[in-house]
Length: 118
Image (tube, rainbow, N blue to C red; front, side, top):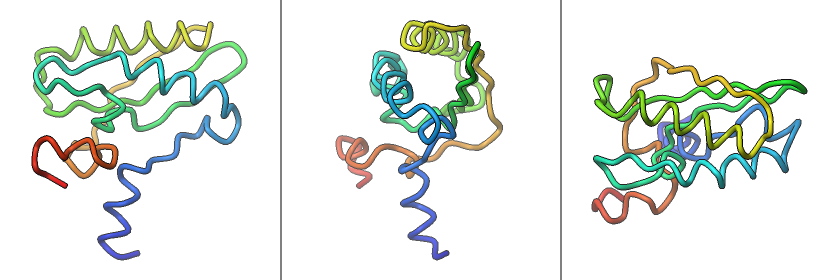
């Protein structure tokens, strides 16, 4: 895989739940667009902060990263992410912070245009 393929795959990330629960995955994706990083002004889907979604019959788990390791809004964004996902899924959701470092190539295609990145 070339480095350009790596970059493309970073923002075209496929969640595990997209194959098993495609309709619910899309509902979660749309619901999470309401969670905005207050420092950047873009939502967590545009930023590519949701790295995975796994849905089970009784619960779900989201793997999320932050734009910076010491984000002062982390607790509030995690809680809003959990609440919005639970609204869409109608089941308990846990949010786990991943260790992957965020970079602008993780953003949805076109989302970085306002920053002059793409």
